Length: 140
Image (cartoon, rainbow, N blue to C red; front, side, top):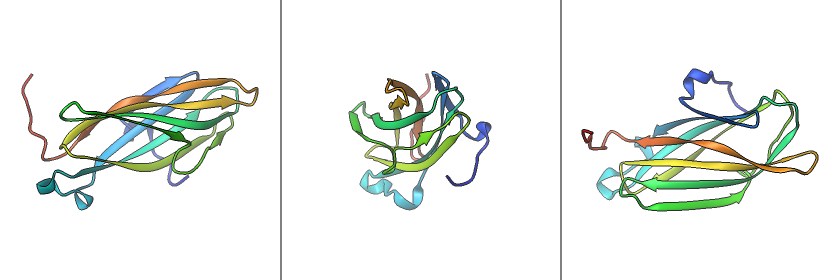
């Protein structure tokens, strides 16, 4: 779906059972209102089947942590209204977004996959950082 992007353009990557998930977040100043504590990010995800089995993405689970440590969990069917089927060698890309009330945060999660044989397994979505220009740098 859309233009293919190179792995080096997707800095966050994880692979589970030959399913690679790669993510690139980007801050959206045009949709954000820092004075109102409203910060928005888009994230592009590519899911690539590098294994021998056909799989279908059925569910998603997100854990979203804002800069104050508040955690929100999101569970639901598919991604962006789809439950893509990935044959060996195929990939699926999509873009979605997330708003936060803080200028920084962290997202991570998993996709629930099913094989043609009816087996269910979870695929890791790597943790990725949500950073905005309004983020206050803190030395370690």
